Length: 313
Ligand SMILES: Cc1cc2nc3c(=O)[nH]c(=O)nc-3n(C[C@H](O)[C@H](O)[C@H](O)COP(=O)(O)O)c2cc1C
Image 1: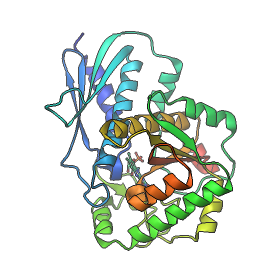
Image 2: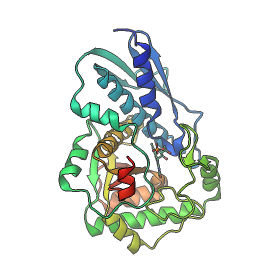
Image 3: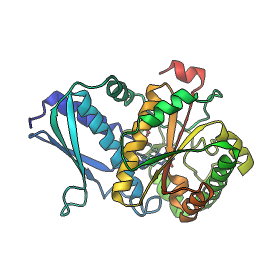
């Protein structure tokens, strides 16, 4: 056990702050204690009653932040020990992480940590080249969180099933005024909102599913056959868990973020979607159509950028 140096504190806090979160709400608080222990709390005040009534996305977001904290610790030469929900009297304490002992960071951890600064939600079409099987295998292997399944959507039948679910959710949520009011309240009219400052409106008006990522009042929803064609050209990874409780949600966020960072490190672009799964019939429909053994938590989509995007990295 040891005190953090100010430099270590900065690096750990910056890593947590850069994690993706539902509607960019950053629903966590990180405490770094001098005895070499970090505590990540869920911020229940950052709630989205319409989008996320059960707080599932809030905990997935906390899981992503936790993954960043663990990565920062490894890069600083620590072996972190993690316990999820360690204190029954503090249910908002999501994780306690201790810096147990010293070990040199692996090259993979250094590369994933470096990717934190480059990861962004990509809500426009991908370039046409498919993700090659070797890269795909590397992304899936980046997940080190036990108890999480990564299910690649494969073939026209599965793309069509997913397109049907996305279309249904899009039409329902587009017409839900209270849902749209909440989304507007968390939308900032700038290209890169500050951490915790809501999502950008930049692609909101013109983009169509699935590129938009978030369906708004003005989003044009393509017909399911056109959507299935577009989905078939992307690498789509469904993150599923054996159960649907708080531990599952945090773990889903940890797994998703390690895959997303691996994709970023490989030069790919990606985004994370939960919006379509906020409707119980969509979750049930997807579970049935894909014969899932667990609970679908989120969808990751990956692809190449266009030439100008790849050059600007
Ligand atoms: C649990 C969770 C759910 C999300 N759901 C969606 C979604 O449905 N559609 C979308 O476009 N982005 C979604 N995002 C991405 C966030 O909007 C994004 O991470 C946040 O605005 C910060 O932007 P950045 O990812 O570019 O850093 C989600 C992120 C998380 C962690």
